Image: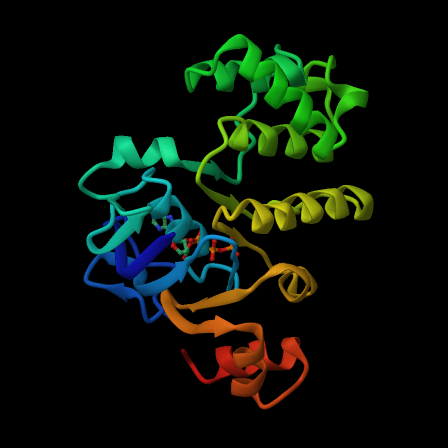
Length: 258
Ligand SMILES: Nc1ncnc2c1ncn2[C@@H]1O[C@H](COP(=O)(O)OP(=O)(O)OP(=O)(O)O)[C@@H](O)[C@H]1O
């Protein structure tokens, strides 16, 4: 289970010239409060969708969860571990896919995944079994022996996801995992995400695609201007918006100002 309470993170703005973000309510006194008050939880067997307009603070929130950034205030607990007090211990529990694939171009797809598995201390036999399993689940056999720098966008993304979860993390966090994927690759990935429910591993992913949320998510967190504007089930979101259509409900939440 991962539980996030009242998370906040600000960035120092460049001191010279007029701020390009002057119209954003998060811009104060030379600081940009990218995340102001974000709370949500994701329990075992749940998939949580993180939604919000461009610039809302989704990636910043996920980077805080991954321990790549340290929050200014708030708390994050992952499987009972206080992430801020024990970032190293928490990192072993978490698999985080960021916007960049982070692959080594000169290594093949398989070598990349094996490399990250070794970094996590996996034995050769365990690593081989896990790679075979991921190649099957993500349908990567066709390009396993191709160098990463020669892979297509979709192939790279599958490879990056495999490397994120090679060590069988107990919490999975994916930042816009389906970006750049064709319909068939996106379906493979969405089925892969859904498989985490049966594993009872909490999975959080950010997306702009409401149909993915409708299909996969048990719970939704909508962030607007750095604040949680909605946190609840898909049905609760529909009721809040007064519409069966998720798109209308999402727009209503954003217009209400969060
Ligand atoms: N290092 C930084 N320094 C200053 N501002 C930052 C920094 N990182 C993010 N921001 C600002 O914080 C806000 C939130 O950015 P973030 O990337 O979290 O948004 P997002 O919801 O993921 O957007 P998108 O949907 O476009 O990916 C943006 O206005 C962004 O410019």
